[in-house]
Amino acid sequence: MGLGAAIMVALSFIDDEKAIALLPEDNAIMIDMNVQTLFHIAAGTLALAAGATAVIAAKGGPLHRAAGNMFAGAMLAMCASGSFLALTNEGVMDEITAMIGGFTAYLVATSWLTARTPPGGRSPWQVGLLVAGAALSAGFVWAAAGSKFYPLGFGLGLGGLAGFAALLDIKALVRPLSGAARTARHLWRMLFAMFA
Image (spheres, rainbow, N blue to C red):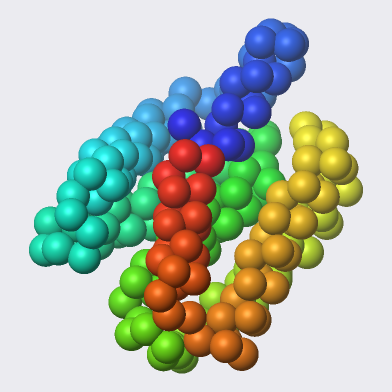
């Protein structure tokens, strides 16, 4: 379960009436959402299985690489579908949950790219992902400032984390990573994305 979904579940325990009020009135939308939700759940389940396999497998070996690639693809699909669901939920467009999906995708993409880039090398994708991380940092704060569901501190926390990750992207661009630093970047981003 993603961080945004966990927060919405927690809110529903605090105030059942509020949670019920969030449900759309049109049942046709619920049917569409069910198919999209099943896709989201299937992608997340595949990501968990592939991620666990990658964690257990011999590092750098063919099983680790294959499971890591499957994990990255499934996580990106889960993030995209979760963000879509958050933005298209009638009556409750949840920008912060959508951005949590974007941030998780950013972490997965930068972790995967770290593993795919040769030690001491750079990728042209690094600059675009750096911009995405910085934009998410600002977006979290902006969205939380106008949110009915999330306190500003929540947006500041997520914005700070995204900003910190973007600053580390700058460091990796200035001084390309190798050895333990490269491995640490790959691991913290992938594992944080997997468990957040």
